[in-house]
Image (cartoon, rainbow, N blue to C red; front, top):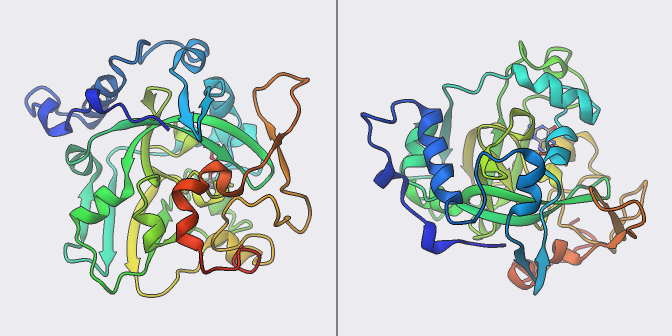
Length: 316
Ligand code: MTE
């Protein structure tokens, strides 16, 4: 992970309402500011962005982002399709402007917040994280976003808030699998325990590779929880609820024996149909050996303390 503090500029300082009236322009300016100083252009073409970004610090190891065109063209977005190519194309019909997020439940300041107002309060930073899918492939992605906890703190969670539920957009006219009522109960829902949600590694992302999030990767706002399997990182978030009890989540409801609520990356807990011991690193050379999967995806130093009293085999 890298955090470029010397380049952090609160969005409020760069958003002159007379100049930046439209959301895209505001975010674009913020992204450009975030990326400035990195030594690469925010609008460079995909091929060069992936390789020119600085290497991230990861458990003492340097992380090189996977090629951008790979992650943008190999997506899991089941509202659109069950394969990774069609979901990329079909997602272009999603309407993402205007966008707002409803925050409710155990908070002092519930409300429906326009995305541009949320972003005005936040400082965007770039974070290079490993991303490990439950399907046993992985990538390294330079996200642009802010810590979820900064947003949660701004709405003042009550002491009764113990879980956070996230809901994706319901847009059946654009999303063929929602229209067909296929597979999951729509909309897509995910959840975290409050201490997981408040962990500084847990991000809300609005960009990647120095630009907006592409629609297929969860625009305009998605969750990123780097020590958990990718299905926890819910896309196109429209609702965040703070709850007293654990929410029912989409994949856990669909197949509880395969997809646990916690979904922490764990090489010693196999999926019932395949091992999680190692992973295929997408974008690496043909002869690159599979990588041994690390507990908590390598973020154990930062997050293991959240789970000290838990049997991770039982709470998978
Ligand atoms: N969020 C929504 N709304 N719908 C989805 O189908 N797929 C999840 C997660 N978030 C999904 C989602 C899964 S299974 C993975 S692995 C990641 O998004 C994939 O993110 P990517 O397509 O940006 O690589």
